[in-house]
Image (cartoon, rainbow, N blue to C red):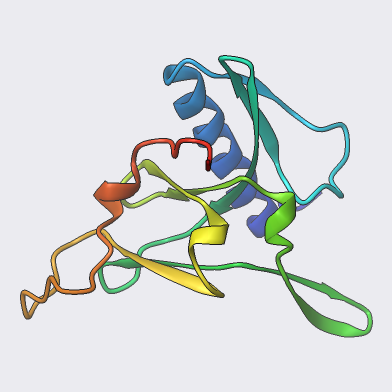
Length: 141
């Protein structure tokens, strides 16, 4: 059976997120279905966090994350906005940096771009550096 390249990337991203979260002191739980909006649940200090994992390669020094689902079937390619109420944290795994970046989807609109290398023109204003998203976000409130 041939490997499904996109599925392999997703599996690697989830494995990297799992290892990173365990290293941060979380217990990691996996849902018994592939149809949940989240890929895993991190538990620590009496709090559960629903986490969606995204594998994103860096392009031109940035990692772009869109809050949507894309799938294809015999009727074509479909896109659906993510239900941000169903996910507490998005973990973005970038293979070029071999790092996981954590963000709350409710803090952003339809997408967010994280810079993993300095821009060529030195622009810093309005830039979201990926290194600032290495810590796990505290629960809102």
